[in-house]
Amino acid sequence: MKDELDLEALAGAAGIGAVAGLRSMAAPALVSQAARTGSIDLSSGPFAFLGTQQAADIATGIALAELIADKLPGTPDRIAPVSLAARAVSGAMVGAAVYSARKRDPGPGALVGALAAVGAAFLGYALRRTLTRDAKIPGFLIALAEDAVAIGIAVTVLRCEADARAITE
Image (cartoon, rainbow, N blue to C red; front, side, top):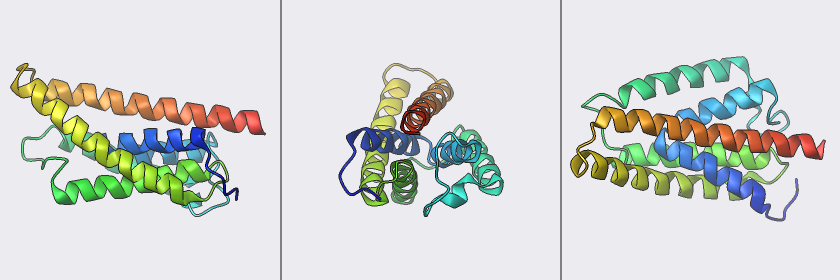
């Protein structure tokens, strides 16, 4: 593994970490699907399990359940301690995975992914609260838009990672 920091790979870790801050399980599900299809290479490292069909199926199922649960009135705020911790862990895992896909030590990716997840969680919370309270936009519509933004960011990051892989091979 290369030791020097790779700013482009760190940007990918930050982007996918931010997705985890918005939708904690969408990020691992999309990373797992990308690894399963070979878009990113996690085959020879600590995140190889993410590239299995079983991991992709489980993560996708949980992510779909999260997308539904997010719209329910009793769902806790994303900045509640347990929710925030789960987002930080998810962000660390996917950040490390994306960073290590470039044959880098996963540590910096984990740190950047976790920090991005926490930041995005607070930003998403504040934006959603402002739009529902002040702009009177229904929370359900904001949640759907947030789903689209999270998935769009993830797809963009993972396409960039796939393109970077294609260039280096």
